[in-house]
Image (tube, rainbow, N blue to C red):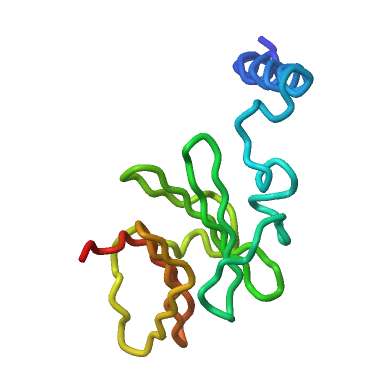
Amino acid sequence: MRKNAWAGNGVKVLAGLMMVSAAPAALACCPSGGHTSASMRNGGMGLEVPDAPNVSLSSYWKVYTFERDGLRYIQVNDLHDQVRAVVGFAGGAQWVMPMGSDEETVSIGINTAAQSGEIRTVVYRSAELELASYESASGLRWVLSRVSSP
């Protein structure tokens, strides 16, 4: 008995076609959705040179912030404009976005103390959060942590 090459994949193909066909309709209706900040809509998050100011506290890194629908994001680029990491936060939640060459080395609120041989550099700080790099001979890691209340 011959197997149908499409058997089992019909749902995947149908779902993919539905997603592709819905995208133009959504853009035709509401290109910005009325809720996108200018920096995300016009060349923002994830780009090597986003249309946003560099707010880095370190001269070794470039940091850009974005906001959409109450969700906020921090993007870190190196001095060659390569995206290294993007984190998001809202309320008490924080997460690592699946983009940037260092996404696997980003921690949320753990291992905040520099280990022996590591150099800690704060690249971003707000009233709520701090993002720091930890560099050593064995590599680089990032930690996003809450700022302690005084």
